[in-house]
Image 1: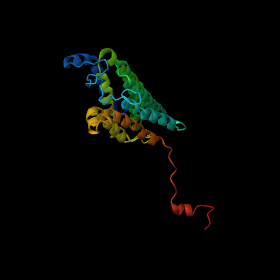
Image 2: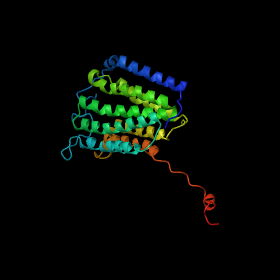
Image 3: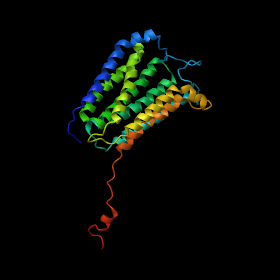
Length: 280
């Protein structure tokens, strides 16, 4: 399906420029700022470790699987991504929307595998693979939101820019310890999606509920930050980080719902009764 090219709005261009400048600032000033704040990453790729020596509170071994709950709860992420890829089959979508959805769902599959591997044996290298999957997912989500609210041409350009920047940002901390570009990609990208959600859908939008996507992301981040608090609140049964994985998997739902084939509207009963060939 080909739609007329849509030039990006001046407001969107300003947003994109501001985020790019912020990312460049984080890239250049991040090391000095981290040093000034005394922020250093340990061998796990995080700044904080619990008493048992892992960055996450639930380090239980179940069925021979270390950190089992944080490992196993990644399965829904992979399944959600596969479901989305299957939902794309047979659908004819605008070009940029099609590519963005493909990247988004492939990112969820990669995140499921990368995160499971990282939680099995947490180290800085494993965290890179974990974040690489998330980087792909973020790039797809941003491009989908742009396609829904700005247009196909800006969405395509957004994907071509955000995918390499997010990928680079995911790898960078393992070599320099600078996590600020990664933070800009996450929070700056989500701020952009929030702004886009307040705009009117453009022609060719498939009807993705950006508000649901934003809400699920916010809930996932809250659970991640409340990892230990949730674990203790559930009598050490399920941690916030494990629930974060389950919530993140639900992020596929607003996109999958939008991909469902639209059923033709039924004619009013009065018209059906008077249709040609129907007995009077």
